Image (cartoon, rainbow over all chains, first blue to last red; front, side, top):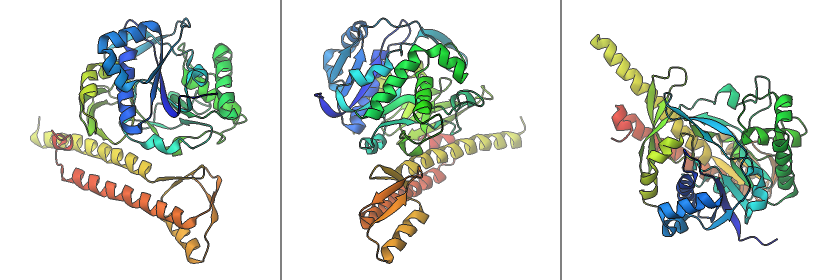
Length: 295
Length: 115
């Protein structure tokens, strides 16, 4: 098979009535190109792509997005409650049911699939392109430098460890193919696996799908078939946190205390990739992120 | 509010921010200490560096090392591996030193945030 490049980044973006995922993908693409210097492919639908190019102009979009794959699948209903600070929330459609198809959609031989809210601010991931198979984070911290909530560490109290589908690096090996096929099978039989693995909620989460796929492929034990990016944790800005300022060298966050929600601290994050889960905060600072000049 | 308590609370807030900021620097330092070779990942810790130096001192040029995931990794050129470990360790600790000393001088939250 012919690939358009040896290495590249892919992102999925499907707008809904509340959130402009296309715009977020532009922010993530800008950062990714700046630090990793590889082509970026956006996987999206016609509506999101038209709105993105209309809203930001083709010239700007072309600067950061090299290729586009338009999908035509009807998304499954998947309502997600988002927070913007501990005090405001809203519900929006979350389209993620075709994420496992990245193996088919990606135009690259080695792919780094990132969520549109994963802001690449270092070249850390560059070191893993030649690691064979599939790589994902299996450790995570919040901006308080505390481990994630128990439910985001294990699938349930005595459950399997959680792997994050926020960042997935993969090659075209048999292991990678089997991983995405297993994920597809789990997605198609989600209720069954929810019963077996006892994880909570009605939201379809790809983090659960990849965690189960890892568990199955490891032989139902905690094996080391998958690369975990050297055990370095994913840094999560929670939806209850806010972005205060975006600067060239660092971003300043207002970090909420999970146990005492009226308390916050400031945190300046420099030289670290950040998973910015509060989409409204990203939206409020999108102009700043696009304007901060490249190094 | 009692002035003494107010001062203590202000210091408490400062100290919380300071500690978190220090942890942010450590996160970066841990990333910088990673060395990738032949499909394995190693953290450039002083004990590993010393061990590799010992192997070199007794005349070894190649060896099998156990990486961060407890897997054996064949190191064909121990000298290059040693150089990479030392380089990763020194760049990580230098960055730690620079950032930590900058942070130590900042005696208020505003200064930590560079406002």
